[in-house]
Length: 463
Ligand SMILES: *Cc1c(COP(=O)(O)O)cnc(C)c1O
Image 1 (cartoon, rainbow, N blue to C red):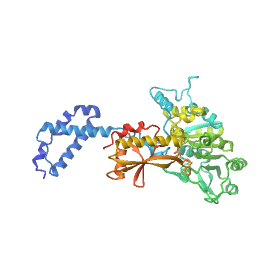
Image 2: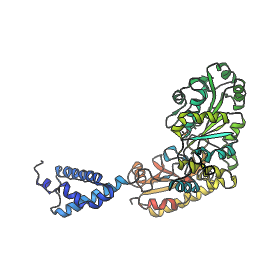
Image 3: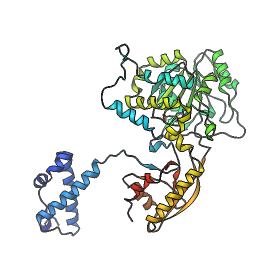
Image 4: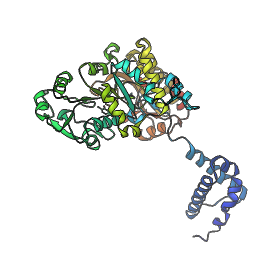
C-alpha cells in the first residue's frame, strides 16, 4: 500500500511551512506545524482508502493550506463564549448563572485596563483592604455589623466553619444536610473545614430539644442550612432561627446560616415566591450568614459572609481567606450591583436576572409569537413550530419547587432527528440552548428579551 505513487504527491512539511508564513505569524510556528501535520495525516489516510490527489502540486498545496487555516481558526476560537439560554432555567449554573448588569460590565472593563486602588487607600496613601470597596454596602443592605467576601458561597461556608468551629462539633439538623448539584455536600464541606458534623433530629422532624441535648463541651457552632433544592412536606417540623438563636446565646455559641441564594429584597412585591432576606435572617438572631453573589442577587460569582463584627474579624485572620479572596473584576462588578440595590425603584429594571424573572406572562407570550413568526417565515424547511405554555425555573437551587408560568416555542424537525437539530443549534456562533422534551426542542423565551437577539445567530443555521 505505502508503495502507492499518490504518496509522492504530498508536499514536504518544510515547503508547506514556507507557504504558511502568514499562518505562522498569526498562530505561531508550533501550532501551524501541528495543524499541517494533521492535514498530511488526513491525506495519507485518504490515499490508503483509494483517493487520488490532484496532480497539480500548487493546487494541492493551496488546498492543504486552506484546510489548515480552517482548522487553526477553529482551534483558536474562544472556548468560553456567550450562548442564548432558552432552557427555562434562568440562573443556570452550567450556563454561568446571572447575566451582569451593563453598569457592572463597564466597571469591570474600567478597572482591568490599568492599575487600580484594589488594596490602596487613596485618602491616606497607605495600604487598603479590598473588602472596603463593598463592605459598607453589604452592611447597609443587610443590617450586618461587618462583612467579607470570597470566591463563592461554598468557600464562604468552608471558611466560616473552619474559623469558628475547627476541631469542634457543628450541630445541624438531619433535614438540612443538603447536596447541591456540582459537588457541594454539607458533610464533605464540614470534613474539609476540619469540623465534626453532629446531626440531630430526623429527616422530617427536628426539635429544639434535639439541638439542646447535642450541645456539649466539644460544640463549636450551631448551623442552619437553606434546603435550597428540595422541600419536606407533610409531617415535618424544623426549628426557627429565632428559637435557635436563644439556645445559641444561652451557651455562648455562634449561630451560622448558609442561606444559599443572596436575597436582599421582598420578592413577593414583584409577584415572585417569598424567599427569606438576609436582613430577616440577621434580625432573627443569626450571627453569621453566608450567600452567593450570582444567584438571586444577580451579580458576579462570589460568596458573602455578613454578621457580627468580632466573628468577621476572626474570619479575616484565617490564612484560608487569602486563598479565596476576590479579584478586582469581581469586586468592581459586586460594588455596582450592591449600589443598584440601594435604589429599589430601578433595581428590577437594572439587574438582568431580576428583570427576566419578573417579565409578565403577556410580555413573554408576545416574544413567543414574534419568534414563531420569524421562524415560520425563514425555517419552514427545517422545522415546524408551535407555541406551548411552559414553566421557567429560577435555578441554582433557588425556590426549586416554585416555578414561573412562561411560554415556549417548540421546534419539530422536518427531517433528521431532534438531537441533530439540537446539535446544529449548539454549533451556531452564538449557540442556542433549548430543552429536548417529548421528541421536540422547547425554547422557553422568558430569557429572550428581544427576538433580534437570536435572529443574527439563526441566520447561520443550515437550511
Ligand atoms: C448554592 C448553594 C451553595 C453553594 O454556593 P456557590 O456560590 O455555588 O458556591 C451552598 N449552600 C447553599 C444552601 C446553596 O444554595
